Length: 330
Ligand code: 2RA
Image (tube, rainbow, N blue to C red; front, side, top):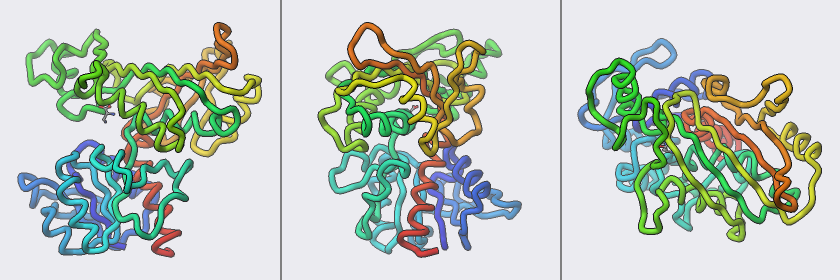
C-alpha cells in the first residue's frame, strides 16, 4: 500500500504522519509530498528518514491513497491528477466538500455512501466533524429542527503562523500577524473570511456541511465562529431544537453509546469537556447536557475535540482505514 501525504511538512500533515504510525496503518511505501521549497527535506516516519518529493513525482509513483492537507488551490489542481492514475484522494481542504459529485465523509456517520467510483473524497471542516458526531445520533432519534452553535476555536486551526503570533504576544514581541488583532487576552469573532451575507466562511461551512453530512437540508443552522487563544482543540456551545420530545437521561445514554464520543458530564464534580483534556485524543467529548427550559424539545450541549486529530488527520485516516477493508481488501 503506497500512501502519499500531501502537505507532509505542515501542521496537519505532521499529525497525519503521527497517527498513521500510532494506528500502524499498513503502508509499504510512504511518499511525503510538499511544495517545491520543501522538496528534498527529510522527514522521519517510524524512525526511518524519508525525502520530501514534489507533487509531480508523487503522481508518477501512483500511490493507492493520497492524504491531502495542502490547501484548496493545490487540491483543486492536483487531486484530479492523482485520481487519473487511480489514486484515491482524501482531501482536508474545502475544495471538494460542497461539490455535489463528491462525498463528504465522517466514517461513523456516512462512510457507507462511498462507492468504487469515488476517487476524491472530502474530509469535512474540523468544527463540523465534532458537531455532526454529536448531532447524528440525536437527529436519528428525535429529528433536529434547528441548531444554534457558537464555536471557541483553537489557533492551531489557522496554522503555524497563528501559534507563532500568540507566542510572540506572550513574550511581548512584535511579529507576523495571522489575525487582524492580537489573539492574546482576546476573542476574535472572525474565522476565515467574511462573505456578503455577513457570515464568515467558517460559519457557512458549519451550516452547509452539517446539512450535507446528515443528508437533511431542512435542518436550520445558525453559527457564530470565534477564535480564542487556546491550542488543544475546538469547543462548541450548541443549542438544539428537536421535532420530537426527549428525556435528558435518554440523550445521555444515546451519546454514551455512540462510537467516537466520550461523555464528560458531571457538573457536580466539575466534570465537563475542555481543550486541555481533549488535546492529543481522537474522541469527541460531550458534556454540559441540559434541557433548554425556554423552548419545547430544546437541549444545550458543550462539545470539545482536538481539531488536528478527529477534526482533520484522524478522520481522514479513518476514511482510509474504511477503504482498506471495502476497496483494497487489506
Ligand atoms: C479553522 N476550521 O479552525 C478552520 C480550518 N482549520 O481555522
